[in-house]
Length: 195
Image (tube, rainbow, N blue to C red; front, side, top):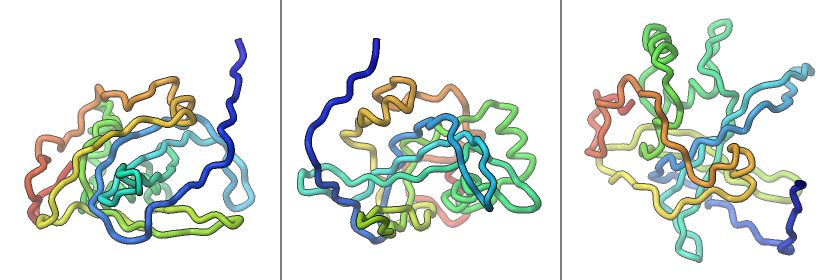
């Protein structure tokens, strides 16, 4: 049976306003294998999308969300950390050691274990072909004086469901974050590592 696309007419998309926000990760979407070109070379890479809700509401009252796409790699190549590893370390506030990365690999750690974790995001705007998009500019652990957000009213859109093997909601991870026991929603001190 084929997939029949629907048409709902033109829609107006309102990007999250640029600024700094308390945020919470609400989803990790496996985008599968995609073609990517870098420095004139095209190769197939496994992509993942992280989705955060921010502490700002649309006219409907729902929170804005922002997305970021990454190669699904925690690797280090010629001394350069992958973008995904870099953003996780910024969020965590501490670099992962080689021993921690090896242990995460051995334990089968999954990105889904970060769903529900709070952070502080900088949202920047980028305009392409006349459309303005909200992008994650930077991320850091949530400052202790800012209350943690909890996910609210999040459901994957139809395009995200297709990209995630038909799952309409984020799937619980069976992996374990080796530092998850150090994280709770209480204020985080300067020396605490959230995950």
